[in-house]
Image (tube, rainbow, N blue to C red):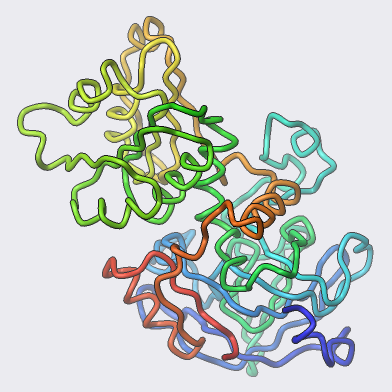
Length: 390
């Protein structure tokens, strides 16, 4: 795929590029297709030609926010596949024409956290709600009138070209189709990684997943790959079970049909004492508590993936935490190290082990990006891929 987009790349290196981008001008209002100017990359940066991008719920959340970290005008988007158009100074690991996925989670490969097998949270470039790039807090986007356009999660993939720091770019095998590679920038990697890396799901185990959106279904896919025997989905819409079956979900509990019993009690009875692994993929403290309650005493693990409000609190019984010997843990980007683990997922897809195709339910062109927003908001799509050119 990369070879089809490399012609003429060197002609634009070091020069500003005019291209199209979908710009968020006001909170909750349709994105506007505009001509923008993308500056050349500075030191430790690369400029990417985005081939396609996909829409994530996080994009919608930030698009709706009127207060910080919401900010306008802004170029959203963070799940993408691209090709390196040009590189700035002091860039050794990437070159023009490389196939890459930009990833919001930095991986400098140099700090104590990035060198450790125990963490994927870079301490040299801690992730923040920044509107600009890491090293100099400036933007690479302007419009024809000189107006500065803000970055988003260091990526801003709703543009035909974007500039990204090398710590946020992972080189991958160009054999993977672009509309599958882009899924690994965020949601699918997060879910699969949570089962594979964070929980280390064992063969023959029982898994419970609260929330069967894209991330929850990716957890199911990861649990399936790890050899889980029972994968129980929990939600409020029984139609999700039919979708979940495609991803390895074996049973479903509708939380609205549990009568007077809390859903955790139903799970405990179903599993004869609790599940080996429980994943919270919605972003509600009350569900984290339910998940913790129904994971098995002695060795049960509860993994939190859902993003709750910043001031949300958990209410756990201290004595129960001590006596139950359970584990409660977070899983940011599924515990994956972008530069080393994402290429493994690419290989597993190419080896026909990891199934990515079923996540893509719709595809549109850039000019129809607002249709992608409508589909996801209405719950009609899992992932909608947005092509820059078609």
